Image (cartoon, rainbow, N blue to C red; front, side, top):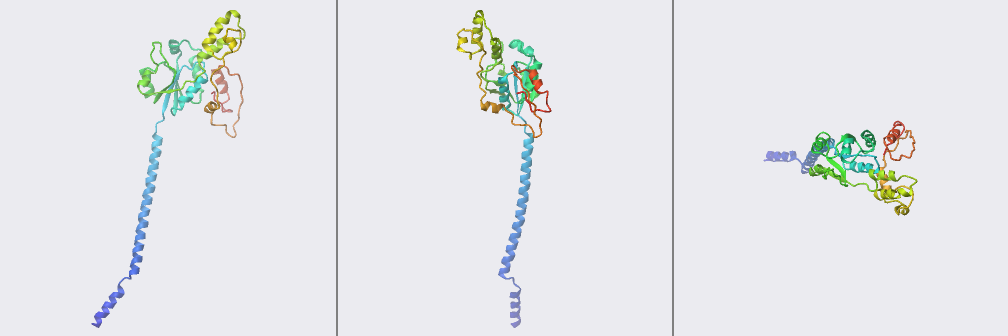
Length: 295
């Protein structure tokens, strides 16, 4: 009996104390939790890394939106440049087609400036990324396919003024039908036709016998003359343009890239009346020293 009692007492002495059990259990829980947290953080970091890599790959694979705009660009002026600026804003890359001399003659009459000079002018515009020479006047089905599949064009752009062919059809009908046409706002107050009218009116002396002809030209091309001239008088001067270079428009045309700290800046002045290819070539005669863009 006494031995048995002693054995029982010995068993109680070997049993774990409840407090020790709690401490051990707590340590085990903490260790497992830390381990699981480490796995979670590691997998989360890998997931975030994979997500970031995937997004970067998508950005790299994203195809730039290429837009196409064509035109005669004869006697190139502010309105042409504003059209190219608006077209450029509709995509990532702007491709411009310069209509050939033969196409212009067939559809409108002979151009004032030949195609190689018009190419120089369009190439000088800072919003233009690529230029196609001898483009057709109308968007034919064959040329449209060439734009889509060879030049990777997404949209064809034109102003909101109608472009009608000699047969009365819309020059951009096929592009509209294909759902690949976008329209921009025409710049009011300036056009090549208007500039020709100003040139015809630009004479300092008018005889009485010519007053009728001048009045006719004035009514056709100009609405900004003095009242004296409008009434058939012998007033002098040329048409006042209707477009207004507001501060907002100047900002739109400005270049947000200034010259570097060590850049050498060249100043060149001139009247630059009827801005032409020769003016552009003069501006680009100093490529090392200046930050010049023609427009």
